Amino acid sequence: MSTLTVRLTANEDKDLQAVCTQTGKTKSEVVRALLADSLRSYKLRNALQNSQAELGPAARQAGWLTEEDILRDVS
Image (cartoon, rainbow, N blue to C red; front, top):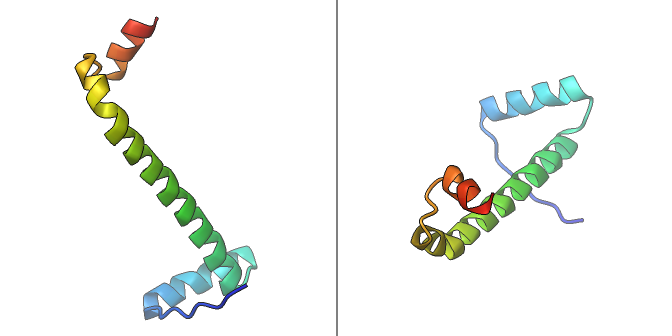
């Protein structure tokens, strides 16, 4: 495991401490969980953007501009 030092504003530290108090977890545990969630969201968003960039032009050429267009042709 590696160590990361992060500087927080007073408000960020207060909010983080409130979450720790509510959950009974340490600051490190809370930050690790939040970072893991954020990284998963980032990866998913990035994958969706890449898919859209790759598939979007072909879908538009096929006339698929909305979900209804796709469902009409697939059904």
